Length: 316
Image (tube, rainbow, N blue to C red):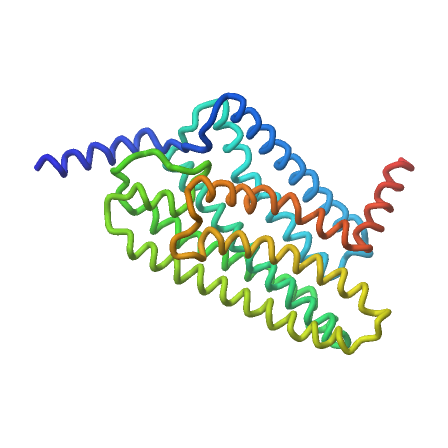
């Protein structure tokens, strides 16, 4: 009878006190440096994504399906980094304890926004496919109603995946420890704390993530396969703008999917937990910071819109 009492006591402790986010270990100087890095990444991410949202909203020349999707991507990135960044920075100089409800909320929005971004990138690839391969049918195929439905489907897919992952994770009894070996609440480190069989959770997570990744990746690869064949048949003068737009999107896709597969797509994950934390910084803070830079620096329309907005603000 001793073991059950001990397990229930530990479970009660986790339930009452919440989880402790271990974060990054190191000296005070190391913690200060990491805090500065997190702060810089977060501030640039917020500024960049807010700028993209404002520019696309205010400039009528950017009111097209491609920029409608890009504005939604910027909104998702803005929320994505805000779910992780502020709490991670607070943990450096204050209590690193997060309540069970807070941990579940963070996991929900992290999974929701991450899945939504993966699906949005696939939608953006399909948009480029229609625009380049069927330009005459583009206004009808990508009508405002269709665009709104595609974005809504991405959000719904993210929400559904998040509900399943969060509910399955937090129905487990956590009785081994309350120390989450990460700087935010994620499924793999939480499963390590469970004292029940997690094989069903792992199987469901692998199946859902595999389905989403394979489906989205297939859409992206097929779309860009057709785009590549179409571009090769164009005159050299028409290729530059197409390569500029598609190159920005493929850079964003490669960064997001590459780091995601490094964390969730390998049987053993990354080589160590510390390396996993570093990779996690990349896709929770670095990529949301880079996306607006990628799409603005490599896109003439966005650069022109930024210039017009600057002139308008200067005139005021």
